[in-house]
Length: 130
Image 1 (cartoon, one colour):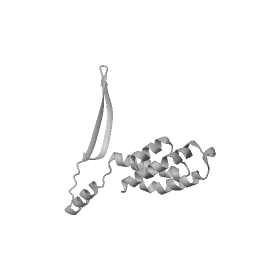
Image 2: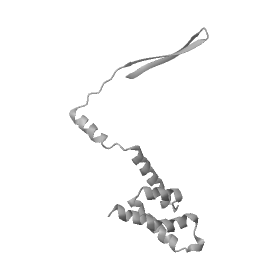
Image 3: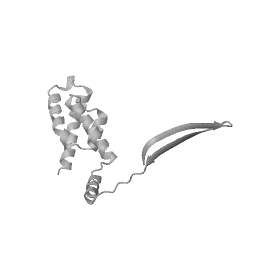
């Protein structure tokens, strides 16, 4: 229903009150042509499940962090192991090579996580694509 005018009032008496809303409008119905119906049906198959959307958002967040030289924390590594992202692998390898040059004495906690987890992560990638 397309609402053109609406109004509201409060009615009270004997210790009680009511809220009254009135709306005036016109009912509208849409008849799809066969072509429009097919297009609508094709787009329905493009609906993204909420879990897939959460996974993609997490990936984008991690990707943004990696591009600004922030390394994954322990929670993100757990997420990596449960959700392999092929397009992040090269970036992680580049970060690994940079961190490996530093040496053990000067590594931060996240750098140590990278050194310790990269081989396990890469072994998952080999299983995914074998």
